[in-house]
Length: 86
Image (cartoon, rainbow, N blue to C red; front, side, top):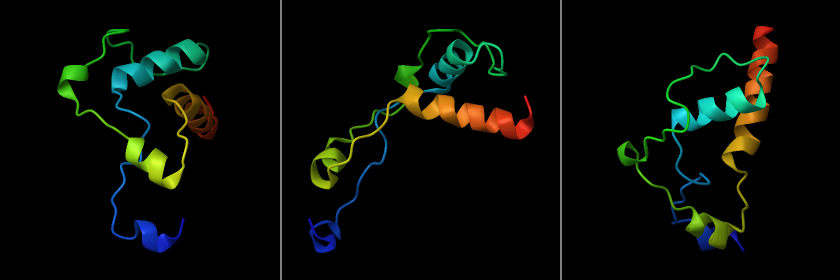
């Protein structure tokens, strides 16, 4: 595929929709000794308050595969905690 083939397209660059409660739940589950994520209401996703996302166009046209939320959040949280010495 050439640049010209996608030069006028717009792409949503996300795997899916998510909310902050999901992120907190993942951090608390995966990094139990290091988490500072607030408890909130575990498992209660606020889906009705968020827009949904469909990345199928980017996946099809660009041939990309997105990491899942857990695959993205855990390494980021570890890196941030290391920087903060937590």
